[in-house]
Length: 177
Ligand SMILES: [Cu+2]
Image (cartoon, rainbow, N blue to C red; front, side, top):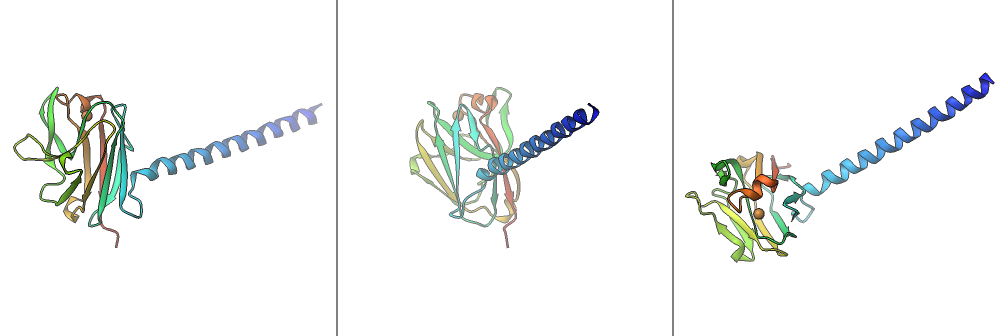
């Protein structure tokens, strides 16, 4: 009787260990997969989808001193204007963009070219306007002095898009040697 109970326990424990191992492995694979799309591919392209007022992926990691192409895909039914920078400018509920522009002094090429907007703030920050259903490419190469953490966001509708969550992080890493 006691032996039967013990063996039942052992079977249950073994099953539990297997279930935990499988779940851990699944979580690891999932973490690796979700981490992966935030980096550019071998061709330097990095796709960022805007859908439901969210960026997907919302954390991007790119190397400095490497040719990059951000590919923005707008799946919402409203225009989005993407900016990259630091420190939000403007009053609360009237945010206009970032104080510091990531692309300040950095050559950029936007295609189609009409999607390029030099933002209305005095610093003429770069904004990439992506019409609903449109795909816009931004080619650039970030200098080593941009290494660090930046934000990306859309400030349309007096900053409402930014406030509801169209915001993400950009990590610029030192160039890989
Ligand atoms: Cu927007």
